[in-house]
Image 1 (cartoon, rainbow, N blue to C red):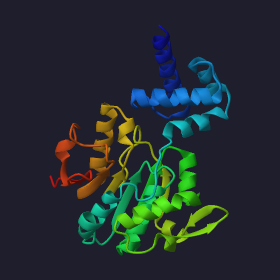
Image 2 (tube, one colour):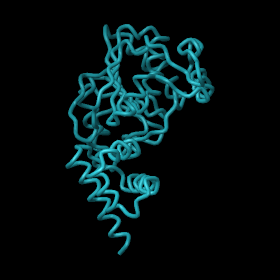
Image 3 (cartoon, one colour):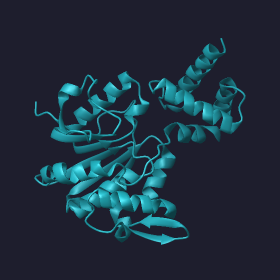
Image 4 (cartoon, helix red, strand yellow):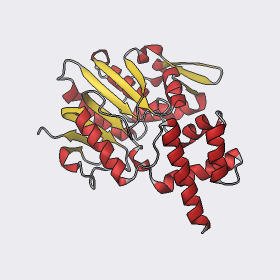
Length: 274
């Protein structure tokens, strides 16, 4: 009975987030969302989810904490270096043939993926003809991404990943350090738009040559995964590219027929020329 009550409380809490604040987590993976909400409830000191729901509706300070906790992603620059090496070796040569490029980083979190791609495109001579669109539903994450400042103790890992990805320069060329922080070059942000966009509720986002959405779909249920992949398919030009996370796949999606497995093993797909 207790488990059923908790499930009902969580359902009501997610419905309140949607009805009151227009953030829709109702189709997120139930196991993932329950785990995060339990951690947040304990952190905020609520005895149950009903009390947490009351706080959400009547205490303006609670909402930003809920959104931040539900959308937090652990990321790093050039995460899974072989993915970025595959982009360099197999996707970039194709992208060179276009006079201009649009790249969408969906679920950009605090910006590590964007800066990785911006540096890669600069190294490959594509930056000046590319517009980047970095989107997320978390305002705090977008603010952090637009600042481009990270703790200095993370830079060693970023640097190793960059080297393994086939980096053509030193990562230190792109940041300055002070007070235990690394601040990335402002010019990397000259050709990016940071924007609020929900993969759950929002529509097609332009005509893209490359969409990179990594380690986001794993938090969605199968219906929402299909909805998101349809959105990506509709947002890509013919023969455009889609990059997913290492634990994500198109294999069981209703959209699998819309893509070719372009780089096997690296979750890089190409939209079919239909």
